[in-house]
Length: 381
Ligand SMILES: *Cc1c(COP(=O)(O)O)cnc(C)c1O
Image 1 (spheres, rainbow, N blue to C red):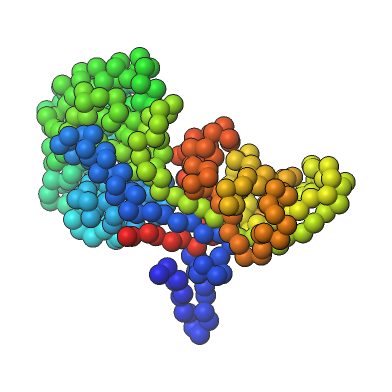
Image 2: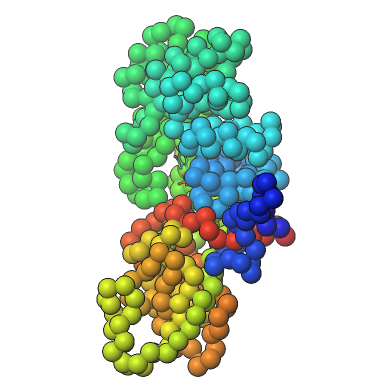
């Protein structure tokens, strides 16, 4: 379904993604599971609106495909990080949904945002002024969310900036303030005192800003209780199957399966040096498989150090190369694994959170790092 071929001047240029047969690795994205995860979050939110966060190409899984799946569940508000992502997403989803650009609009880019009918997230008084001027130029009010910094010190107006605006009568002229928002720094640690401090700071900031619906919770914020829900939640990770309640059972369905193809198998004798730098030597005779998958596919060199086949763990040996990894397959019956077989890197045997745990990172980084060379399969039913 995704075999995209671009013909130019008689030459056929194969574009990624390719076919299953041609690919070195296959990424399967379960859109049915994403839809179910959206419904589970909606149930938890009990009537509060729920957006979808699609930054970084939908956490590496395909913003356009995820948006379409969420739209079919009635989701009509999306968040991206960058203006360029917003422009792409607008082309994919058509005119209907609201699309907010979380990082704010770079100075001078406002006309492009207006042309794509994007909503600005306003993070500073300077951005507010630029959006006001864009509204004057466009001859109509322009939609925005005002982001205030309630204690993460990353994006959004500082409390002093908000207070100064409160005394400036014309500050919001021409701005259609659809939301007042802020972001939680520690929502995945429910007992962290910063959560309640940020919520209270958000209350004080809202009181100084134009009256508008409010938004505070990301995925984990939804699980902090209804006092964090306000009028709109902004989950990303939980939609993609990352556990929003670390340390507790994952309330979400897994979404991603990543499989790599065996490029070659071989046997080596005791003492054989394995991979770049010979960082590993065979302690005895070994059966090996080399898979077409490496750090150029976004598998961080320090990431989870095993693949799986038939429920059997196949450890990586030696260094991860750019395009390949050597597996010890000695635990499988001889001759069981062949060229072209698929081994699992993410899926039922190793979840995104498992892989992240082995690598000392978070599921977000595993997904956002996924490369562009895979054949991508989208499961729709
Ligand atoms: C990334 C992001 C989200 C989504 O966070 P998750 O933890 O993935 O649910 C929500 N709001 C803002 C401002 C973000 O940057």
